[in-house]
Length: 184
Length: 437
Image (cartoon, rainbow over all chains, first blue to last red; front, side):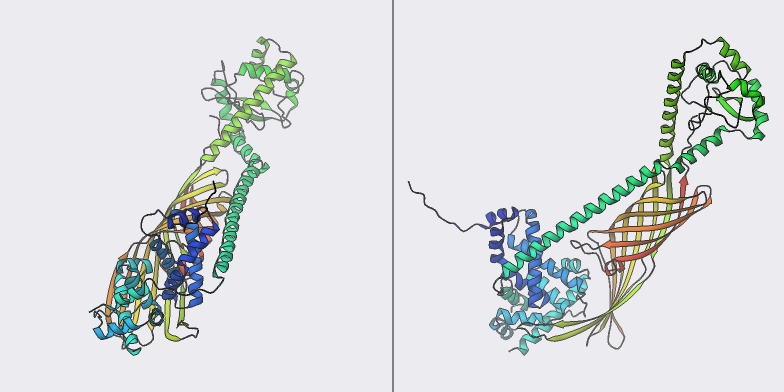
């Protein structure tokens, strides 16, 4: 009776289990799966490609070192994203780039015309526009608008007032809106 | 109408960026280096801990075997047993009124002059003496220069015997009463006498050990107040560059000024002597840290923020006294402290470019995580009254950065290496006296 050999793509759960056992092959598969996404996350915070790559590497080192603490509750990608965001924030804190800004509480919404402009922009173009925001604005915008943290959570993460977080987000929206319109 | 952020999120949440070929190899190399570095740091901590333990044990062993220690014990015990000439008369009066039916001798274990705490009766001791002094001691008595050493007996009775300058354990003189008792005792062979002497030696050693153990029970209570030696002001101008696609694009410039006030710590301490000269100290410390920030964004208003942080910590220190005089004590101490942030209060003031106050926002937040620190101090303590000491401790502290729960920006996070000066009062409870009563 001949034996038939079949290869199956490893499920994420199996990959994680093998990574816990320091299996380098599994680590590589997991890295290949998420690295491109995570470097984009880092880039949104630091606005420099090489720095973003370094931060992504640091985040993956932390991830592989602590992968045993992943309980399986919630999506693995969300857990990984949290590590990547925290690593980026640590970098910003270390380099003293988190700033305060003015309170601008006017709600900013986008007209149909502006919305179509945003939708026409590529990911890279939007990333570039966000990268042009000041560090403080950009960080709060990323955390609130893209990662989905509340202002209370952001205030705690960045050691700032909740009011400061709100005002920086408002300011960031206004600036981004201006940049989008200029980019038409 | 769609919100801008919804559209951006939709576009960017799953965005990807290309990585160069061989990126995994770069990462694998980096991870390997980090792992080695981590192991090296871990090994260094173990070595440091082992060295510290070794150092403490060496100090303890050296001190216990130090001749100085023996001399101090001897002096303390001699003070209890030797009678000054001025006390002789009183003792001689006591001698006549004392009842000596079953007295217990009391002697210094170091000199074998008197006192046995192990409740040896005069009968037994005198027999030993008789064996040893039969040949010489009693006969030599008339020609000796007189000095007196008391023998404390049960029920607080003291008897004085005459001894000489060249007094030795083998030459114990006896008075008339003792001689009378001696005459009634059966004579011992030299072997029996030797055995008895050995028994007495053992009892001396037991007494000595017990006395030394008692001397470890000293402890102290104190209040402390300390502050860093310097405050600090930093100015920083940050350029914001956007090198997407390669070229740097300087968009914003921000000037930031931070003034860190001197941290102030007050606390209560308690110390217990582990061995002579080596104490372990702990307690509770409260620390107040104040920082003022001014953020000037180009083309925008000015924002000032005042931040106040309150910490509560528990120190753990090992202190070794290298000078231990009656009035002055010098010591060095090393250890660490774990501090928990209680609360962080901020007040943010916004000013228009014209200088008008636009807004003031106060807020409070909790401080997550712990602030750990390692400290080395050198201190001088001066005795003010009895056990009450005032002390000064210049010291060096390293505030270990907490990467998992970064602490609010204060002098400690900006300058993790701090010089400090501690001032305090400490009450030392006297060591248990090494008596055999």
